[in-house]
Each structure stands twice: as C-alpha cells, then as structure tokens.
Length: 475
Image (cartoon, rainbow, N blue to C red; front, side, top):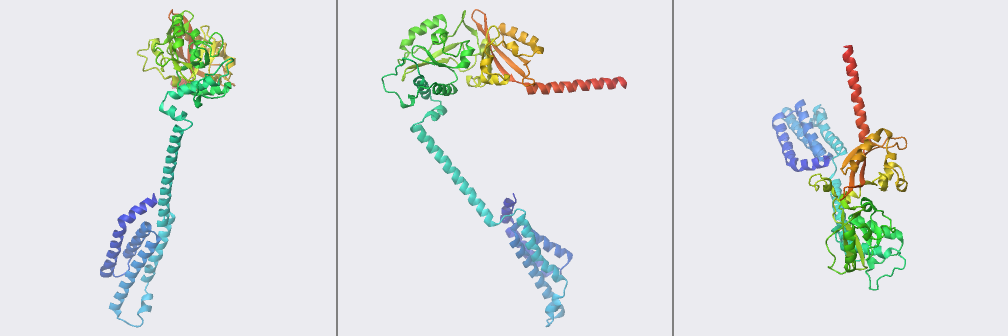
C-alpha cells in the first residue's frame, strides 16, 4: 500500500513540489528575508513533504535548496545593511539563524530514510517486483499451456477415460463394462474370437473387476448390474439391489436378472435377450421389478429397469429407468421438486429394513455411525440399536412405515463409547401393487450436535423461567 501510494504521489506531486519550492524561494527572498519561527516551520514542512513522498534523496535535495535560498537571502540582506567588508563571512557564521538553516538538509535526509524504512521502497525494488510479477504470469501461462497439451495428448493416445468422463461420453462406459466382463474369472468361459479393443483387455482378478465396477457406478449411478448376454449377473450395485429388496451377492436366487423381474416382464425379457446384441433391435420399454405378490407401487427409486447392450465383448447393462428418486409415488405433490439425483443418493447414509424390521443392508457410512461392522448389522432387529427411552417413538415410526407413508423422526440410539447419538431417520416404505408392506429404505443423518445444543438451550430457558418465578414469589 505504501509503495502504491508513493508511486501515485510521485506522478501527481512532482511538478507541484518544484513549484512550491520555487514559490517559497521567491517569497523568502522578496518578502520574508529573515528566518523566523513561521518560516522555519514552513520550510521543515516542505522538506518533510518531499522526503515522505519522494524518499531520502529528494528530502536531502529539498533541504539543501531551501537552505541555499535562505543563506543567499540572509547574505544579501547583510550586505545591504553593513556593506561589503573582509569580516562578512565571520559575521554571517556568527548568526544564530545559520543553525536552523543547516538543520534542513539533515532533517530531509533523516525523514526520508525513516519513510523508506516504514515501507516506501526504492525504484530498484519496484522494478524487481514488476519483474517477479511478469515472471510469475509467464510461468502460469506455460503451466496452463502444458496442461492443455497434455490433456490433448491424453485424449488422442492411450487413456481417454478422464476426458470421456468429463464430457459425459457414454462410449467409455461401454468399455468399462466390457473390461469388467473380461476381468472376471468365470469357469468354462470362452472369450470372443473377434479382436477386442485394447482398453477392454484386463486381467481376471476379482479386485480388478470390483475397481472397474466402482468406476462405472461412479460415472453412472443408475447402473444396477453388469451381466452376460444371457442375463447372468457379473457385478451388481449393492445399494440399488438392496432398495429393490434383493441381495447384492451372485447367489442362485439373484444370479440371473430374469429372476428379479415381474413374471410377465421376465417372460418378455427372455424372448428378447437373444436379439439384444443386434444394433437397433433392443426395445425401449422398461421392465418392472418383482415383489412376492406382483410389482412395486411405492419405492424410493423407480420400480422399472431397462437394458443396454454392449457389442465388444458382448454384455448387458441393467439400469434404473430414471436417474431421479421416486418421491412422487408417496403422494407428495408433483414429486419432481423433492426428488434427488441418484448420484446424490449414493452419497447418503442408507439402511434397508425387511418387512420384519430387520436390517437387510447397511452401507459402510451407517456402520461407522453405529460403530459396528456392516456384516455384524445384517439380520439384526433395528429396535436393538435404539435407546429404550425412544422405543415409543420408534414404534409409531415403524407403524407409519407399514402404512406406506413417508415419514421422518429424530431418535436417540444406544450410546457409543459412552456418548449419546441422535439420528434423523427418513423412511421410504416399499409397497407392492397389492398394498403389502415390503420393507423400508432409511436415509440416516447424524444430528447429535444440533440436538444437544437444542437441549442445552431448552434447559437454560427452563432454569431462567424457574428463577424468574421464584423471584416473583419473594417480591
């Protein structure tokens, strides 16, 4: 700030400073003629102004100029009054005014030095700062140019994955699913004879397959499963499968996607699977997921799925028919304003309950909140995790769920490591077309800190009311 102020002041006041010095010299010679308290103060202010604005060198020059003007004026005045004699110099040096004149250059130099130490940099420092800023700008431009060139090279050679993800291209999703298919070690499986894209060639280790599938569902959260052309599930999205009331494992009950479809839709899909790999032959009509007594009428996500075909290597992808949640099924107005994207849903704390209110699925975030392993929570009655003081609230909450109504409640859980835990539970019951309760999807939020603050404020308010009532009685 001081450097900027100095630069601006130099541009604005240089000519003014010169004019002020000339005006002071003319006035002193023609009008003041002698050194007085007023002229001394005026001279010192002028020198101080120059030193603060222009630095110690200009302060010294200003002091020398004003001292020279005063010395010349006093000498001329002495010559007019006494005349020229050989003793003129000693008589001038004996004048007390000479001390105040000699102080001016010293004062200008010292004040200018002080000003520079307080932040007024020299012209060399300003030039160096400008050079550093220019070098920094050039360096940033070179870095940006190199990053752009690197991105262009990456998009053209070898690794188009990041560019394709950022541009929303679906082709890379097909390649991910194909690479997943190629990486899974399935017994008696033969790879296609036709040449495959190099991106699709991967090893067959299971951990590689899971990493590829994680990349796929991060890019496309609506993906339910990747399957072989006959519908056999290779990898599935555990969260979405749990919402549908299915297991994420590849067991015999859910090993084929046809087993998860409603009866009529499963028969239609079985007929259409042989032509799935032919371009342009796959139908757009989605398939309904099944319940023990039909399909779903209410569910957190869309109850219908659709298939997409991959040509090389041949595979199928099952996707939820909508990327948005299915809030409209709970009769909450239009639903679109309240629905959330499946990408956001994948980041929420999800726990799924069976019709008997046992935990069928809990993601790792819920397990961390409860301080337990996800496997240890499976099959556990949900009420076993609730504080006894909140059992009545839980019963009312579960009763509302069984009626198929969306509800939310704040409930205190069992203490964890001696500390209280309060969760906000949002229930999205799953109801069949026959009106039967199929379980609930719970979205859980930790509100312990908020509730403890509210309780503290309520306690403080009640204490103040009690003290106020006691004071009123005595008064």
